[in-house]
Amino acid sequence: MVPAADHYVYVVECADGSLYTGYTTDVARRVAEHDAGDGAKYTRGRTPVELAHVEAFGSKSAAMSREYAVKQLSRRQKESLVE
View 1 (cartoon, rainbow, N blue to C red):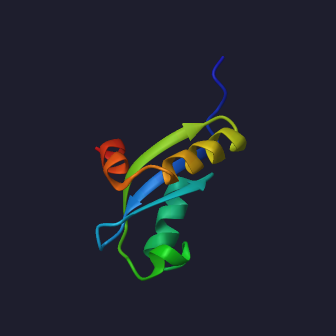
View 2 (spheres, rainbow, N blue to C red):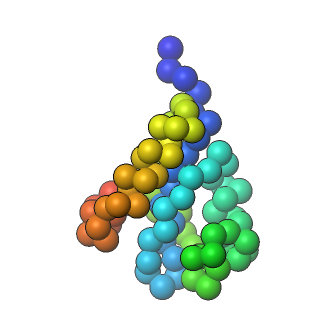
């Protein structure tokens, strides 16, 4: 049996073309927060944002590990990931 996916790693593309990676338990809510300027400090001046990539995980630790791994990728590697 596959565990329910309650944890997500997401990548949003900001208005300036930059990519932001984060962790959440509710992707739609988190993207809306970024769009409203209430998300991470990085995205506040770069709205609107558009969801570019999502990965689902059954545990917070797995999602956080993946978030860290994605954040270590180069710009080119992140672009390949979101394509």
